[in-house]
Picture 1: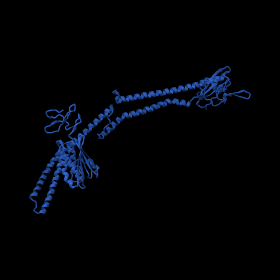
Picture 2 (picture 1 turned 180 degrees about the vertical axis):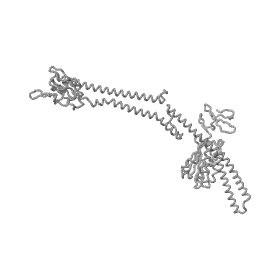
Picture 3 (picture 1 turned 135 degrees about the vertical axis):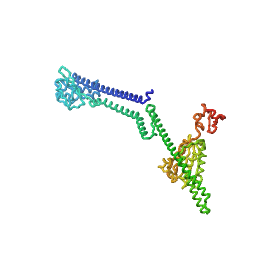
Picture 4 (picture 1 turned 90 degrees about the vertical axis):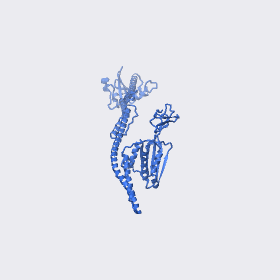
Length: 544
């Protein structure tokens, strides 16, 4: 049975069934045609025998054939024979028509009751004689009309009498047009069967070769660089297994490309990091000197005059602000370029958001911007580095406030569970991001601000990747922007009891599902059982 589940087995089975069906239909049609031909031959033979019997009766009887066939008690001349027998003539030794079913050429009687006969040579429309060679020299006395209807045929049967040789001429309808159709009928049926078989074969070939065509098309996409293409691998035959192997190969190629991209990015970041660290060190030294010098100038050389002092303070403050701005840009550059080592631990999602909002609350109040946090029930803790995540939300909140700074608006933060993740939606009602820029906002050094470095969202993307999370953006120009951030939650679902637990590296339930271990990572790695009121040390005992 395994062979029938293969492509070759199914194809051979279908072709065999198709061959048997074709031969069976052809045999049946030939059988029907043969029976039809036998029936027609039987009817023709019966008509000929009846015609000969009528003619013989006309020779031996004083009763004319036309009167005989009209008798109700005659046994064999039925309606079927009447339709097939055109005429029966009795020709005497003097080549006169002694009797006929056609009254126009049958004998007549004159006023003296003498019989008046029609000569055979005077009649017209006599069809061709069948097997005329048997008649010998008598054939010349039969006035065969070449223009007679081809649907009629004549049979001349010689009968020896005491007066000499007489002939019974039977004229029959031969159904020549039907005979031609009967001759062509097997060919037509065969052609029809072949057409149906060809159509079924074409459909089967199309159905069986479609997976191959799909594989060919997918291979072209992969050759063009599109590694996201997949083919249907639901079939259980060789093509299905080939499709599954093809999908696995494509997935591995896609992973390899991603790893190569990440490796290239890591190498690039490492080079830029080393170069940036050296440059930053050389820049920060004079910046620190300038900053310290400004502080010294403000303390030791401030003018006595109040007006001049105010101007002096303003100028030195502006210089310190510019120094701080340059120092901040250097910090952003270093944060993006150098490798990051995150210390992941369970933290509160809402507390992380609230700590970041404190930085922009004052600016939001000055710009008439309202802030709202909506948190769903049962939001678990997230697994993250607090400092890194504050940097993420700081960047997102500052960008949102700056987008609404001129017109005011609303900043909304929504926190909700999303499977094994926690979902953050950060929405502002600013001017939005043009559609042509949406795909570039996470690229390093891309910025639409005159004073921006273009590293803020690039750093956000890098930190989110470190946390095994995702970030996406939706924006409509003139309406606002929504960033959707998903971070790993601390809690997981136990496969044995479908309850939540908080560490993915432990076996949490016994076989009977009665004990659930709830482990919160901490310094002493303690494990607490919810069902058994004991506390054990994880380093000394394996759970579950």
